[in-house]
Image (cartoon, rainbow, N blue to C red; front, side):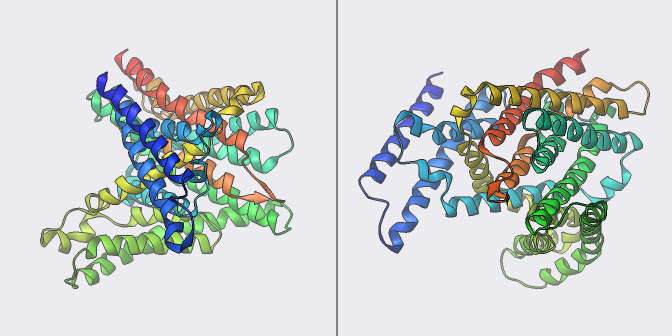
Amino acid sequence: MRSRVFSVLAIAALATACARIAAAGGVSGGHADAVAPALLGLAVLLLAAKVGGDLCDRIGQPAVLGELLVGVVLGNLDSLGVHQLAYLKHDPAIALLAELGVILLLFEVGLESSVGEMLSVGPSALVVAILGVVAPMALGFGVSEWFHPGSVYLHLFVGATLCATSVGITARVLQDLGRSQTPEARVILGAAVIDDVLGLIVLATVTGLIAAAGGGSGVSATMVGGIVGKAVAFVVGAVAIGYFLSPSVLRMAARLRARGMLLTTGLFICFLLAYLAQQVGLAPIVGAFAAGLVIEDGHAEPFYARGSDKLHELLHPLLTFLVPIFFVRMGLLVDVRQFFDPAVIGFAVALTAAALIGKQVCGLGVLSPGLNRVAVGLGMIPRGEVGLIFANIGAAMGLNGQPIVGPQEFSAVVFVVMATTLMTPPLLRWSLAK
């Protein structure tokens, strides 16, 4: 308890000191001083992220929840009269680092999966994944239409955020319970891989529709079919071509004796596919995920023969630095004052109910007899980082001068992410113990 109190006091003391430095003019003026706010902001965000993650880890919750919560606290200090840190919400350097963090996060998610795993999952995992996208999307669209009638693109984005599944939380609970090798666990993990791909295709389709609408094009069945086809073609094409080319690229890179060539080559493939995805009108994270899928350990065997660490191990320091910045920044953008509005609270609660029910429908897709369908549905509940990524893209996109996902809707989505993250571990433990 003492260490927790000390940690909270340390964050408060650091934030106060930073505010005083900023107020004294120590972070303004000149090109060199223009960098100072970002450096100071990084110091605050990194320390806050690690302390918040540690506090949540001590009480059995995922670290990402603590990173979100400290971001919410720092982002709402201006309500208490501390305005000097408000620039953190919109600092371009911090925003860029957060964007890089989320690209690398999806790259790592892809690395943890493989094309072979996607092709080998059973029919139960496939049906569970499809239901896990269709049902939450439909429910999310309906809830958004009920509370905010008329904004079709907002409804599509809200529905897309509920499609996502953050299986990392579920995987950790299954591992802690010693149930990670059960048939239910295999269905959940297999479905989550397909769920990620389908969710990214949904995201690509929605962003494509909004981009077309911003360009003055009307929505038609032909246009929707074209966007869906482009998204599917890019994902399938990038994975298929990359799967056959990445071994040759890595073998060529292994001939160079420069240090860090495996990490450099992996990042090259990641950033190249992220760039190509953006060039064809898709979100960069679609390309980053595809890059992770096409790189397998067997392709990097020449590097491992020389004693190199695995690629995901080499990525770890970068992820440790950049990913928490993304989550804390997402918390910074939440305006707690929005929750004093009963309509926002009602929307957040209804959206959470839709998130829970939508993923419980997944259990109906379990085709093998004797499996715990409730546990499978509960394992697909947490939205985690993927839901936040979708909401962040919606907040960054605009139509007619207005963001697609406004502050109220963004705050409601963050509420859903935190609620489903908190609910999943105890519910899954209860279901598996039955």
